[in-house]
Image (cartoon, rainbow, N blue to C red; front, side):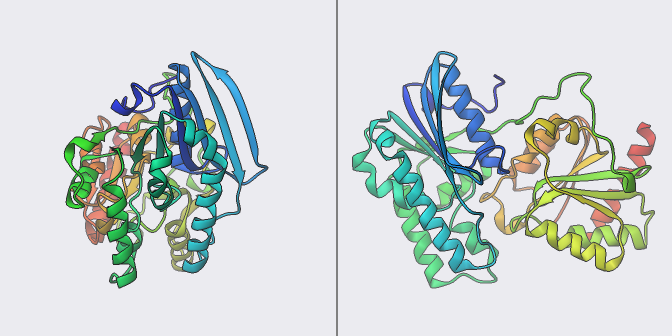
Length: 379
């Protein structure tokens, strides 16, 4: 088993562990992918691990001996999040969190350590009030911040969301420890009153290995002969769209038009870009995200990778795709702030790195020209 992420100080003592996440593979979800691999690694080291998550297929409970320990996966069949309705999303979240808590309840009571994440949202409001019932330490791997992401997505905040944030911070101060993904998240938690000695920086890694001699995917027919820029994964509310859309159009209307964008993506941002490009008659290719066993081949394919993050989400979201993008050995083009750990990580990319500020469509178009020039020189 590869080392998926840095070792956590919270992994050392506990024998019986419970990990709660959202969508588990083969369903698409970065948090579920990472938590499954985390659970497998901990089991092989000798822990008895229970992983509880969601599935779009049949509910199941499967246990197996793994390495020096054991792994039990409890999957709950769940319908997709109703993203079109805020009320529908809230009801889905409450019901899903209650189901996860109920399914894991007896194992939570017996666990020496409990690890939960930011997905599904607001699980902290269910686990922490019951903390006297748990014998083990309660560790929050704070992937995406909620309700901060909801607040960041609004033109202005509301009293209801501000009240929810105050209550969330109240519960956060009663968690035993936090695993954070980046220095930007450390700053955000510090602003919320969390002491530094309760946080541990435990970065993700690439969920796939890029072995020497590995093969790339075939380029889609409409991208053949072009310089391909790939966006792979979720392209949601936290990711910058307008700079990409305007800069890409500028590149094709006023520039050389040598770069073609490949969206192997899901999410509202991908839908918006695809609709806009189709309306404007701009060339691109859209396909669904690939299964994890095909991800390495996909990420070897393009000339470069696109990563984006809106400024208002810095420190609240860290796109985990950055690790695999860097690991693929391809250059990275980041649309976002230098305050994000995406910039900190991507600057180490040996293959090359460009950063464009959100809102600077001219700079994005220029970066595409630089990318095309570099791809041509590398042939």
